[in-house]
Length: 393
Image (cartoon, rainbow, N blue to C red; front, side, top):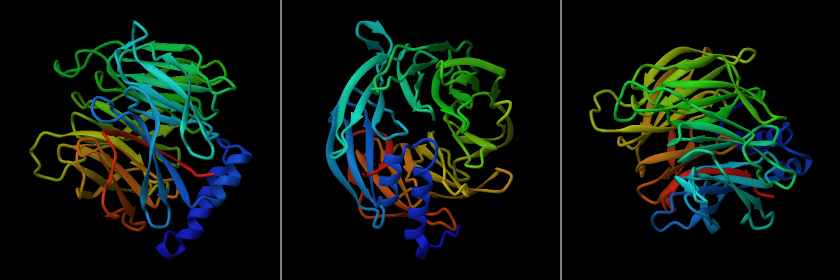
């Protein structure tokens, strides 16, 4: 498939059609996706200021215009979101340390209203650990997996036929500590992700300088340590978020404390990660205080992006055929503490949540270089932390 800008109408159609007919989506989603020229954009936030919860926007896939549709649901600290493969349900962490009088955070289940995109709360369950900060839905749509930063743990919660969450069927408490006594006094589960086959789960733990690897059983909702049980990064790195390459043979973890990205070869049969490279996310000579946050691979597999909070930029890398990265510049325009960002399914636009500016910036992706061009003015959004998109019906 070529990636010239003149072909993007066709490319958008083909990519969305391919997504629609993947095993993750049903026939209803397929029919909707093929016609999609707009996306629904859900934004998770921190509610310690002006924010009321989860916000809804619409993204025009031709112009890149982002339009606010107001509050989708009022809920406390829905800092991270995940959408069910059928696009009928959305799940959000409640990043807190106490839920219903017990130590731990929450995971909320919402039904997505088809016509408006608004969210209806179905139920809530404990995340089994304090400060849940990351959540995904497994590829079969049967479980929600959550990482607890404060608790230093991960859990799996079953999804009922009605979209509601059951109590955790699996819980793993991470153990140990890292080298930095200030940040790594104990485990801090910062993300959990699944491979394409839905067989292995990967938990980046900032406190342990490890990506822990679990065998995952979607039918039982269980997580069991793999052999070997983890891949290590350099001391004081602080692994945070994790992303697979579309080829399924490479993966990347962004390290919050060291401001680096570590690239791995991935063996899909054994679930084993093998480090092949670690590269800085910062321009040469930068000495200020800064921490990374998000890492995303472009749908084409040609580019990788990482966010820097402090340097306030999106770092751009090209990816070669062996999965290795080469620095390709930084975008700083309108960016202020970019905690999270996301690329739309067609690969045309990258949306950045500027946590401290209370805005979302939209950038058009150059399909040849990976470069980012700002589209219009940033759109207001209070304390944005997570951005997730689905095609409009």
